[in-house]
Length: 102
Image (cartoon, rainbow, N blue to C red; front, top):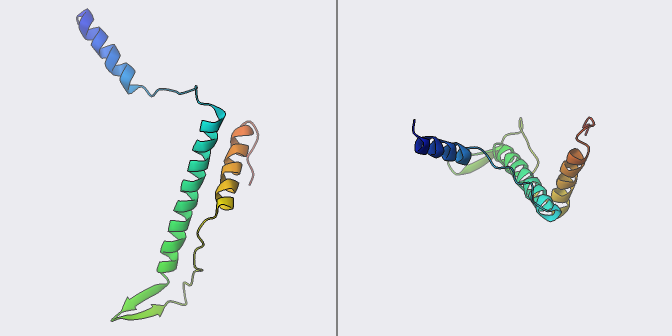
């Protein structure tokens, strides 16, 4: 291997290794947690909506409710729901050395 090939290999490997960004400020970290909490609430709502949709079937234009699997109409998450999720994440991060029981 030539020295140039070694440098090229090192550069390639350097680009493959994930870079840790420790220069984010508190606002950026909080925004990231808020986005994650929002995404989690959206996923939960999507799942609940799919369960709710499974309570119905349409055959020949007639909608039928399946009483064996009724599900409540899912509620759209509010800002308070998202904020509660973000707060739980922050508590988890802040108390990383203790057991998380919620």
